[in-house]
Length: 155
Image 1 (tube, rainbow, N blue to C red):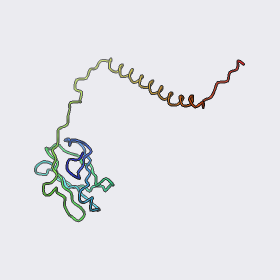
Image 2: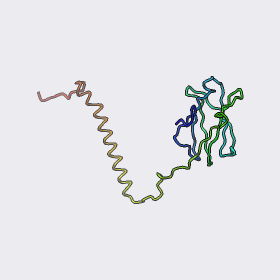
Image 3: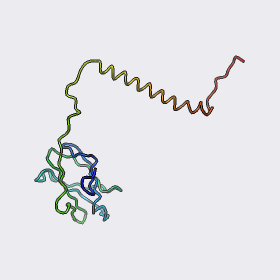
Image 4: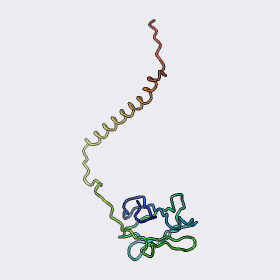
């Protein structure tokens, strides 16, 4: 996902307490800088300030960062010449969202019916895969005539 020109994330939301991959294709990548560092912190006061050297790839400079429980993720970039890309003095600032727990199951039914249904569906999926494998393997041989005939000994 591109949130600002030349800054990409591997996710559509920045979630607290998760890891995010950042790709940077800005001015330092365009000008063939050798080394680019991401200078980052969290919240209005840039808590847990840190700097990481990014890996240069064909897709830009990339790194992974562990996000913390904060309201925002703030960063800027600098190259080996100590030149800065700070989004024209605005820095790159993105809100962090809380983890969505809608899909987390909290009330688990402990009956034995569910495992049996899961087992049956697993067995059916195995049977279907085996049937598809046989079709893919043997039908072309039958069509081409490239299969072993069983000799008829009744002649």
